[in-house]
Amino acid sequence: MRKKKQVAEFRYYKMPENCALFALLGERWRQKYERDIDYLHFHNYLEIGYCYEGNGRMVLGEEEIPYQGGEFTVIPSNYLHTTNSAPGKLSKWEYLFVDVEKLLGKMAAGSPGRMEQMLRAVNSRAALADSGKYRYMGELIRTIMDIMRTGEAFCQEEAEALMTALLMEIARTNGEGTFGYARNTGGGVQRGNLIFRVLDYISDHYSEPLKVGDIAKWAHISETHFRRVFLSYMNMSPLEYINLVRIQAACEYLKKTDEPVAIIAAKCGFTVSSTFNRNFQHITGVTPAQWRKRPENYEQQILKYQIRSEEGW
Image (cartoon, rainbow, N blue to C red; front, side, top):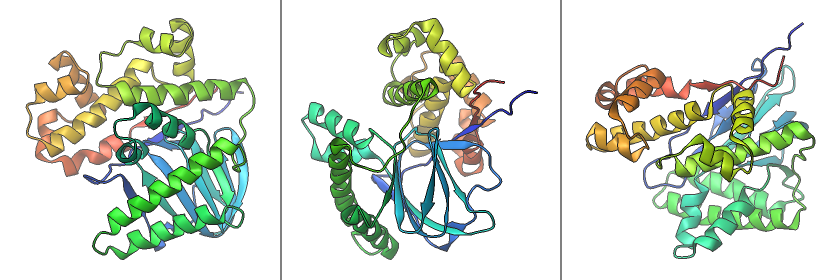
């Protein structure tokens, strides 16, 4: 009998212009989480969640951990996870999504080495933690959410300032090795960690003339092995994923600028316009010109694009 395929969904969020932080707040997030969904997902930003009430199980990577009200999560971008409420029960969560690089870049301007050190520390692990034990972090998370909730003048700036303090506390706690987090064990997770690092690398370098062989060399494995691991984990080739990231970036340029399509294609790493147009229509279902005219009609196409993770049969 064949094992059921697992699925990983890339949930792409768009950061508000000139912001490094946005929040998902309110009663909408009191619900039965993921009970009918049997796959994990990952985001393009760091996710911080706070559970106010309810209980269930949180899946972080390949570990499943019970959660309850009063706990919070810190989940790096490109990290597979999901939340499952207890059967028949509601849980209330609220969420913050953070462009860590953009936020910390304001602090570490002119010091790229320091910036890289902070990024590594913040993104080094996924955590499910008790706000009673990590009281300062729990209070900061709730305060940031309450500030964002008001919508008052300068609330964004105040929330981002407090988020910077929170990120420093996360980095410090990660460095101490004491944070409650999902401990990954086994060869399969080593493969997963490799993929997480590669996804981050592609996000940072998609605008460059990336070659699969160069990525494999950066990851210190053979190109043949890299292609096999990536395909088995993501159910798409490395090049297909690179094109997906590039098209997402192109969508933002098309919506926010009036630059010619050929210029946008080049900015997103496509050296040949016909290749850009073909990939754009394959992923979004429309041409770049159609997207530019009515982007609000087509964004759901890219948000629904799924990456299937196949662990074997």
